[in-house]
Amino acid sequence: HVYYYACTNKYDLIPYDLTTYYRYCRQRWNIRPSEMSINTLNPIRAIVDGMKLTPNPEKPMIALSIGDPTVFGNLPTDDKVLQAMKDAIDSNKYNGYAPSVGYQKSREVVANFYSCPEAPLEAEDVLLTSGCSQAIDLAITVLCNPGDNILVPCPGFSLYKTLAVSLGIQVKLYTLLPEKSWEIDLQHMESLIDDRTTCLIVNNPSNPCGSVYSKEHLQNILSGEPCSPPGHSCVLYLHDQVFPGCTYQSMASLSSDVPILACGGLAKRWLVPGWRLGWILIHDKNQIFGKEIRQGLVKLSQRILGACTIVQGAIESILNDTPQEFYHRTISFLESNSEICYSELSTVPGLTPVMPSGAMYLMVGIAMEHFPEFQNDVQFTERLVTEQSVFCLPATAFEYPNYFRIVVTVPEEMMVEACTRIREFCQRHYRTCSQDSNELDQ
Picture 1: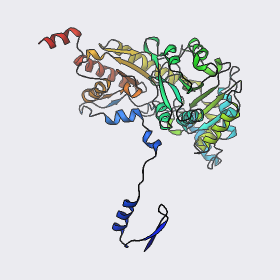
Picture 2: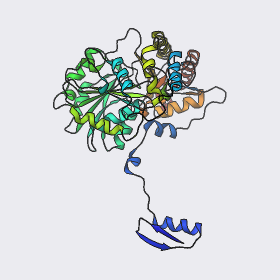
Picture 3: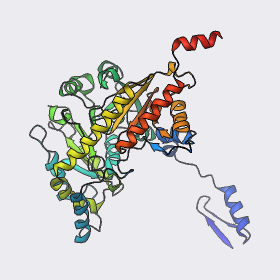
Picture 4: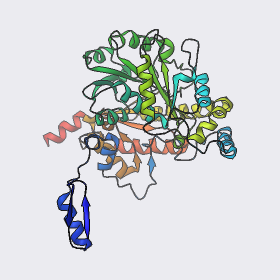
């Protein structure tokens, strides 16, 4: 039998024996993974997959590590949201392909929902995406070339680095200050800027910190060097879950000239992360982006037709008909659980929780010098699973060691139990400095 090999552009005669054939092919082929695939790494997966997680068989597992509000079933979405999806399916109008940037009507709905006098939006300013993750991907990709660098918060959502590094974009981490409720260290951020800095990412409210920036702090960011001519574009990740008594201020509403790509989605606010609908909102009052960035986003969206058409068909009802009580109930629950967690862990020797103002996360500092059995937060949280069956995400996954992140979406009784177990664990392993010295002397 004759087999043609395109790679060698010739015909070869080989025996009609599959084993011999495949051996022959292996000798001739040299298939290598792409540079992009080699450079792609999710820090959370890299760390968690390497941890030795063997829960205590005598205690049921409590996972405080998963940023998915649907896991425990205690935070269902609203019935109006479900009905909107059912109606969209029953209409039989949304079973085909949509335009790559989303249906015009759906984009209008999102524009109207987020538009305000200080930052007006029209349908042309909205691109619908497959979740907020794709929105962030498109935003970084349209602004940056290989060799450029972006400014990313630390601690911060690991996806920023995963996406950037895979594209050959350098990531520079600017520090957040836990003693100031995770405000940005503006001086440190400005020190990182060079002539290849193309993008500043501001995450507000924050994952993993749960912080919400004040109007004054956002104005200081906008007036700083990163946002001054020749300028660096801002990518703002929207979350919208802010606790009562704390005011959320969009950066776009405060900007007079800085162009902003705001990324958000349905996932957390409407408690449906699996529905995969996100968006990019283009705020560009002075046309600094120009046509090129907008056209670039459209072209990039055409690589994969991402946004789910069924959810696009339901989006008008989801945004306009979801009762305020649903939002209030969800946010009140997250605030209550955060207060429980903060109150309980504040009195645990060796731990320093930072009270959040929004989102669904809480960061806890570990005074590692008082836990000499463990070298770092990874070992600390690993042993916490082994002894107490409580899994918190080590903040090394966010490149911020000696902290761990707690997701506060678990049922209240589970949160109380988890805090009790964390307390027991810390009491067992905590050592004072004098104890350490005495043990060394002995």
